Amino acid sequence: MTSHDRLTKFAKHYRDDARIIRSVRGTNLTAFDMGDFHIEASNSDDNPNIFCDLYHNYTLITSINSGDLQELHTTIDDTITSLKEDIA
Image 1: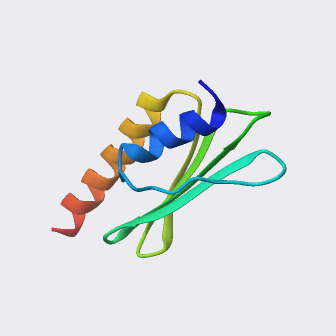
Image 2: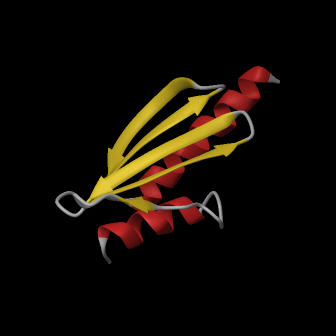
């Protein structure tokens, strides 16, 4: 799986229409809103690990760097769930 494919697969967990932008230097980037939450993620051909920042109302909540998509999804999903429970 290419780094672009890996980032696409990560993003599709949250948004079917997530757009992946590829720079001329081989960096893949995506960012999208999910209501009060916002994700920014990137990786590169040199390092297929995904660097992901999760924001709540544009305040950085957590950053994670991993090549394991399941770990990324679990960390982000659990953080969102926990914040929603704390807010309620």
